[in-house]
Length: 442
Image (tube, rainbow, N blue to C red; front, side):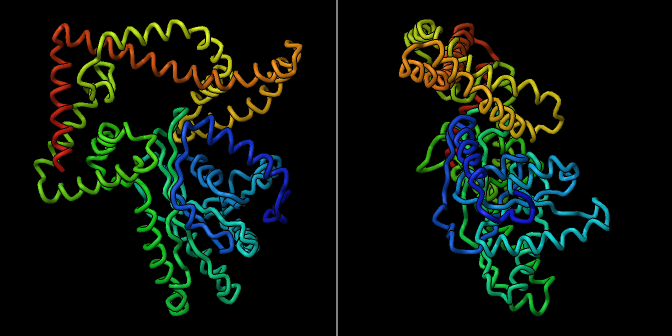
């Protein structure tokens, strides 16, 4: 498949998407939470507009949480090599040329524009990241006008008959780069581009600005947005302290809790600056204290760490250690090898993209090999299949085993701090309790 027929359905692409989507939604992330799917009408001509904080993973978050074969727009400089360009076209990605690519190259956007009209007519869905580039901050940055210009010009080219709608998308990662995190995707209510048609006919520039402002507002309302640059670190850390335990919650997800917390802090900053500053100061102090004492917020929240529970946990860890070793065949192959590669990547926001891509490629290569070996070693077909299936399951168990070991060792560590009356720990717990009570009072 090339650029000419990129909007056409591809069975090979569908197969790749199903495999890559399974790996993305069930292995790379431990949970993917999606809201607002009812806002996506496959019979409409749609442009998706997600926030852009985590490189390739932002686009994949949209791709793997709704049906169909949408088309992406990406910067043109990555299409320079023919082999790479062929792969990108197969992956349904089209280039967009910028002034930095050379003024003469901008003519290439005319062809791309015509192709986007074909894509929208076919109701594939177009995914455009309107911030233009990514940044590792939970904040929506100023949007580029390109997405609005494409929407208006596409409608204008069809005598305003397409009635294009833009879906604002909010994406939140519980951690940008770690494995087995939680991904939350919120599809907002569609923005009717037709609302701005009359203004566009009078003044295209005013209409572009109005549509961009509305899109900015709607996107910001579906994501975690920390406005303050001065207090960003304190507020961002406070989300983890207060709402970290709700990361897997579906009925009342962490993203919505974070938004509520941030809104209350924004109000508090104006109504009671001294209390706001105290909360931000405590947040940073607790963060630093927890780092120095090698503990985490969930352990701090617990009033007691019963010795019996900790000993029982250690016994369980000892007895299941062989399963942990077996599970690491899977983890070392598919999770640790990619970790070795990201050391060469300077931009940390690309780490998860590289890790996901390499782990997927390794899975496509080695899982069939593991299956053949299982069937070859064990004479029984069913036994061979069973052994093969235990490999990824034991890998996920080994990952949780490691986390459980950290929690148990952390519990013993806190008991030791309490027994020796560690002054740093006493101050940490005091600050943490004060912070929790102050936030609860909001």
